[in-house]
Picture 1: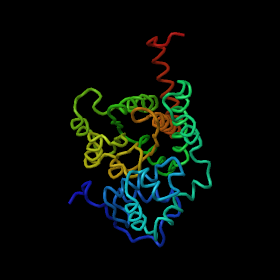
Picture 2 (picture 1 turned 60 degrees about the vertical axis):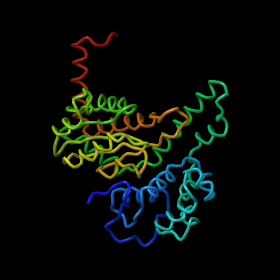
Picture 3 (picture 1 turned 30 degrees about the horizontal axis):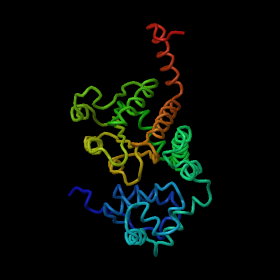
Picture 4 (picture 1 turned 90 degrees about the vertical axis):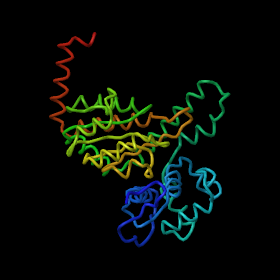
Amino acid sequence: MKKTDQQPITANRNPPDSPPANIEELRALLIEITKGAAPHSLGAKSRDAFGRILDLQDSTDLLSITTLSERVKTNPSTITRLAKSLGYPGFGAFQKALLATRLQQPGSFYLNQAQSALSNADQPIKQRAAQLCHENQANIDRFVENLDPNSFETAIRMIAEARRVTIYGICQFHSLAAFLAYGLRLIRADVSVLDANGLGVAEEIAAMGSGDVCIVISVAPYSRQVVAASQVAHEQGLDVIAITDLGSSPLVSHSKAAIFAPHQSSFISNSITSFFAVAECVINAVAAFDFQQTEQALIARQNLIKRLNIEDR
């Protein structure tokens, strides 16, 4: 029977001797829970709360269960139950694990500065611009701090060795999909944006098969079309890579590798600056995977640009 959003995700292996000791281990556990490979059973609301707690940018939100519950929009009792479900005796031990890494690192310096000094809309335009830029800097910093090298390297290898690569993102993330496709086309053949010509997602996925890679991109609130495409691509035998925000993202359960980027900011919609930084990192990493092939591809591209007289110097 297929899992639904209302059914808890259960696990198949024995529980560990002790709960996670820090936020990195908690993030890894959430991914396992979402994939159904952990010893814990969490309902949809608990998974969502868990993901939002792990994505908090300001450590002060973790200093009390009341503040934390208000920040993630849930009840203190829900957080207490979550802590016990994860193997902690109570919130205190859960809180200690959440703060363990943050107390040793600078954390969200840019964001804390922006929130404390630049939070009012009636301030000068330069200060409001500085706030948004600082928030984006903080998101990129957090992406680097929390990057899982194993998952990232797996994604790069999959892209570099794939027969074909297709990328799917809609609305704002369509532009990111196009940018990522452009960069990857500089160094390897057969990269496309899924449904770029409006020919139909189902038709294009059906034309792909084993050995092909589908990169899906979405953040909360997740686009149903992208979630559905990731599931269908997985069921068709494609290797799915998720570029998303949280370990609780519905894209994770269908992916072989996931890359996470924080995006909280004062932008009026979902901020995607950090995701463009992720895309640049992916493109450079794929280029470095086989340097000789990349060099040959870039030389061939430059020769075509000269022949077509594209650049005006």
